[in-house]
Length: 321
Image (cartoon, rainbow, N blue to C red; front, side, top):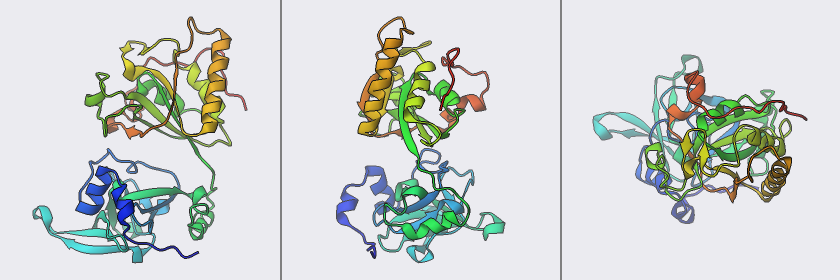
């Protein structure tokens, strides 16, 4: 089937305000506070409006600038360069060919061994398609890029959890076998694009949360939840350690009906175990939008050994196959 890439007004109308500001009005999102600057999964990045393939994870590198950086486009015919003299400087803007979305800029300070270019791109202009989902989403021809590199196209799953300060949760989860990536953030509330200053008082409805990307062939969702119940107190409403307020509540935000059913099973088993002094009060709710927290919160205890945490692994717990 031949895909048709175009600027679709219907899709543009459905964009978030930030995606619309960036793609349609040549805006720039904040560095380090966007979805893909520190994203490490294998796959391709396509235009958020047209779906035209733009960049590959194989050409992505850590430039330290706070935005996704690539050494080259995946398809050069899908990326156009234009002169940009705004803000009193001369730069080279890059836009998608078919949707004419503003993507970012290209600079000549990239890795010399890969051509010396740095395509500095806004996450808001992109949609990511994992390598294992390429065929299902109609991009099967790009699978060989990863297979030829000997990359196993594993399926991944995402869990969204809240259980007090995300510093301690992330420090323990990222060490769990089968976990691929962790992101500290905010979810479960109604305020758009919350910051820590917005939500720390508990007024936005959000909870400090953790997004866990894992390999379900190595770690099941059920075992991941069992671990979750071993590292925090699910019987204390709106409190973990010294932290009080709804932003520190215990919660599981399920992404699928299967996750919901598994969570119900694990909560029932934890209640029946008698390990807690009171009934488990963990909230079970459908997942909403997850907002990645500020960069200084990411892997906080790795950067600040000995920093505050109210999480621990309960004695005698072990991960079983």
